[in-house]
Image (cartoon, rainbow, N blue to C red):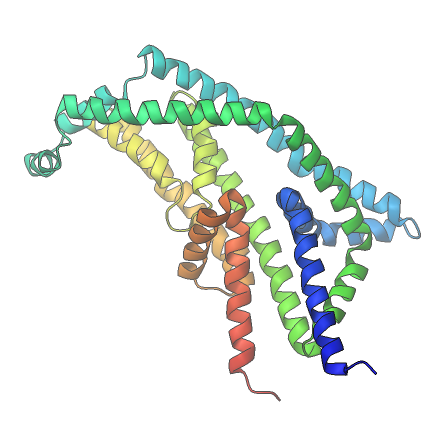
Length: 348
């Protein structure tokens, strides 16, 4: 007769091996799987409404929700990406031709600084024109190499991107159609109390939905407002700078000020006082207000995490997982806090 303990150990070993093997198979498409799951969670409330209007037609309802997702999220992102590439290419050409000279701009700013600030920069060897040009040349070469490498990788990986995009859409369709049943099976397989499983599942879904919805809305709003004010002030590449502000706005408490702040300083240093005043007032009172009002409502209120935890987990997640980390980081932090809350909360 087979030893039950040995049989259980053998089964657990088999389960671990096949799970790791399956994870290894999925790893090349982990981004497609991740975004498929995230978008399914985000659009599930919409899918439920669509399903109410298309009773007994789950395939058609899932397809309709998928098309809405394409129209609302993916097509606008594609159009913005095309405009971004065009403006980034234009700015790069101006940098290479010398029409855009950041060294000269920095010298104008340094010339307008008070003596104590110039002395401080001089101690850091940042006031020398030659030193600045050397540093900027080094940065420019590295940036050019990075851009060239990225462009080559994009060209070489076009097929992989198309395949990953197709996998994401295919997975998203089935997750929308079969998501609730699949989620119930996953929860049933987790060896925890039903209350604990419900708490962790609810936290996972809430954080992904709040992070995606909240951060993307805040980023889109700040990027749109930043691009508008740059366009209104006649600054070259408003789409490029708007997208950069949107990207940086994913970092709470840091955000778009890293872009409009130095530009406002440059305007002030070069005597363009009204441009500096308008950009500063708009940046603080409009762009900054969006972050201060919308983010706590859309992100912090739902996730119930302090701002500093959101900031650190976002930075750490983006360091480890790239752009995907702005969702993965807060999700891990939320599950960490929820798990320890379960441990510290006595059973009722």
